[in-house]
Amino acid sequence: MSLLQQQPITALSDSNAETEIVALRRAFDEQRTAFAGDRNPSLDERRERLEKLIGMMLANRERISAALIADFGAHPVPASDMIEVLGVVARAQYVLAHLKDWMHPEDREMDAGMYGNAHAYVQLQPKGVVGNIVPWNFPFDLAVGPMVEILAAGNRVIVKPSEYTPACAALLNEMITATFDPSLVYVAVGGLQLAQAFSTLPWDHLLYTGSPDVGRQVMMAAAQNLTPVTLELGGKCPALITPGSVTEGNVESVIGTKIIKNGQMCVSVDYALVPRSDLALFVDHATAFMKRAAPDYARGQEVTGIISNRHFDRLTELLAEAADRQTVIVTLEDDTTSDRGTRRMPISLVVDPAPDLRIMTEEIFGPILPIIPYDDLSEAIDLINAGERPLALYVFGDDPLVTHEVLNKTISGGAAVNTCAVQSALPSMGFGGSGMSGMGRHHGIEGFREFSNQRGVVVRGTGDMIDAFYAPYAKGAALVAAVLGSS
Image 1: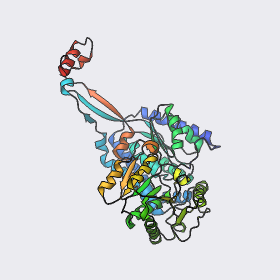
Image 2: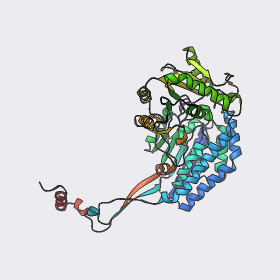
Image 3: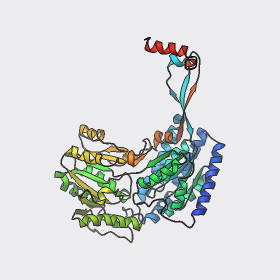
Image 4: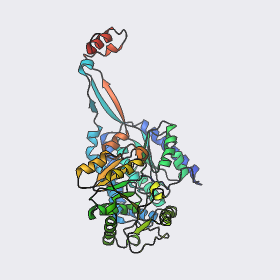
């Protein structure tokens, strides 16, 4: 979930950093020691941990909502409940329903003529101690959510919350401390110097969610210990409206998704590709939807505040640059004023912007939506492919042949047809990027495997020809001749 406006992890100083780093290393050593004494927790132990996680989230539902409001300035309570609480709970419940099957060894085929009655299987082992560097936009969903698969796989975990959400970080620390022993789950609260030290530890696996720039730093630090990484990095996610598909419902899906976190979401629509002849129709549908659904959006209870003044100013600068270039900007409510004091911004459409504007070269991560006209579908596909691979791609249309063409000719971490963002919320579906938008997956069986060591095991039986590989190679030569024929 890319946060391109985030500073590099070396940029800020923290007067408490030394104390925080010492505490982190102590917790890391404690978890390594604990794992050494318990390398393969039982099914019942893993289930108990997930059930405690569910209870923790439900018991703190109202406090989670209050912490989000404190950090964002404004945050809809139903969104807190659905995404940050119930989304995590549903994820854990799904894993609980399937964990027994996932833990079973997975048989692999063997050639009986060569290996007799030997048995081969993949054993899914816990990796050990896993680190999770969490972004600010979903401070509970992206801290506790991946913890579901991490704990289900039998690991221990240390979480580093974002310094941009101090209220959420403090509550997360309190919740975790009250629920889990620190030798199993620990929260490392601190600033960017702590984050820098975090990625240098010899983790058994490291998960980072954030920007590609910081992701490179994390990966470079992890490489010093050959630590495997999962990187969730975002990108400019397009919504391609195919010809004849600029309908009221489709535009509602695009704008409705933009409302979630006020665009501060890695799988939000970053720009929309619209047939040139339907450009005005798209704007009309978008304006009508906002007047009907949230007429006072940026002043009411539906909006999420921009996370900080710095992020607010960046978004303001993006709009100002477009306005200075005489670009058409349509604000989707009557009062077009942004309020820096409360960090509330209305949603703005930027119509047919120049390709060199910052809104077209940077991930927006806010309530700004460029609308790009196209004349031919192949032109729209080429535009998508000219950029880096996005974390998500959305295609709208009623003709399956057309929507499948778009999917087959593009590459993205995930995709959805006639909707947006749903692919990232399914407990059963792996979530992750491709190329610059990330690597690896969490959620579902893919997440369980991501945080597991997939050890291949062969148990030798009888009636095999394994000794054909040993010297002297007369038997091996005879075997090759039998397979390939004598020359």
